[in-house]
Image (cartoon, rainbow, N blue to C red; front, top):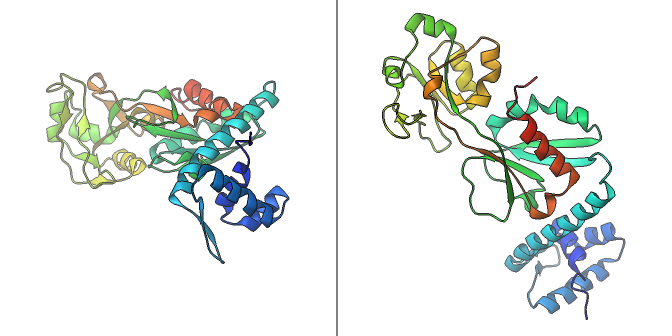
Length: 300
């Protein structure tokens, strides 16, 4: 019986490098041997994996699908070997993590504890508000907020959030402190504008004016960047609403005061996503465990 894995590694290396020659160099064999191994693989599965010309090689649509599955399988094999080899050792090597921009500050503030615990681990942070394609982009862990689409990825919830309404002490001293969400009608409210160009209405707990209430507010400024939203509020321009982990540093420094906390609504959950074959990797497991233990705690 033919080895079901024959040709897989030459195929993956060629697909990654878009070159038979470079794949051959990495494998220590000849380009002809790489080409022959892939040709046999194509004959066995009955599809053409590459489009070949005299100058370049590119994946066919079937090749794109096959590559994703092959890389998942290779990741599972590598994770299994790493788990066995490092069962009694601290995680080492490189770890690539994709996360939304608004989580950047909160996470970076906690990294000294993680990297101090695992000095042999090198961390790559990639800030992006879109869901990364883990296999194609070489991402080990994607941290995302909100509801998750159906996916083959493994998800672990790492923290809950809530919406916090804040203003600078000087602003409240001059304009008064709202006692109820409806009192915001008399205040300048700094709004967040989503990437789709829509002003995000503020959320409060059920009972503020109705079930799962979104209060309509108005003001003379909106921004599309969360950190600048808080800076604008801290400068005394008005009141804003942000997620609780975003306001910690400003509140601790006395730049902002949280108001209407008794009316705060639950925010989106935060999840860590990884490939099924990666969840047992010591590096991945250590980082996700760290997030679960530390992200909800105040930064040092």
